[in-house]
Image 1 (cartoon, rainbow, N blue to C red):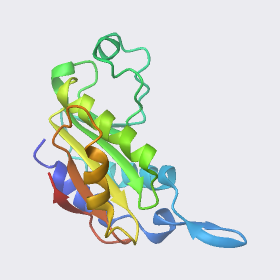
Image 2 (cartoon, rainbow, N blue to C red; image 1 turned 90 degrees about the horizontal axis):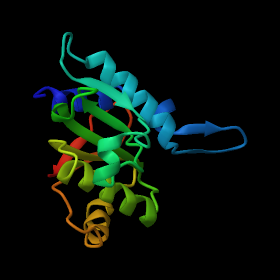
Image 3 (tube, rainbow, N blue to C red; image 1 turned 180 degrees about the vertical axis):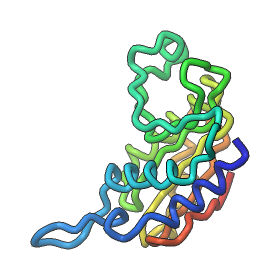
Length: 172
């Protein structure tokens, strides 16, 4: 799916502040991954090409999938998948999303999931998208944590620094 990079750029540019940070009554705004992911999904669907053979799905529970169980990937609930449901050779991209406040444990889990889905399940692209205003240390942090992943796949790292601006792919 050649259009995916452009779709991600346009979709992230369409995410406004109220989905980037969640306002809290009586407190400071905070990052909430689910709020951001649902808006990202919505913005991506707005850009989705008509008659595409690929579908965008979110949070698919893989627990009952017989092939993924054999591959050791049935534990996963990826944030977003670009695929052809029901056709394993139609797996295009797995996308995991984290805020700049992500804990090491969550980053490690996502790197393992992205690697399994690319190395074993056959997804062509593994995309790790971080969002937040304070992303300067994220590439080094991800690189450091990635040394703990057995058979680390090639993973695209994207940074989305501010609302209404596109995310930028910083490594692959």
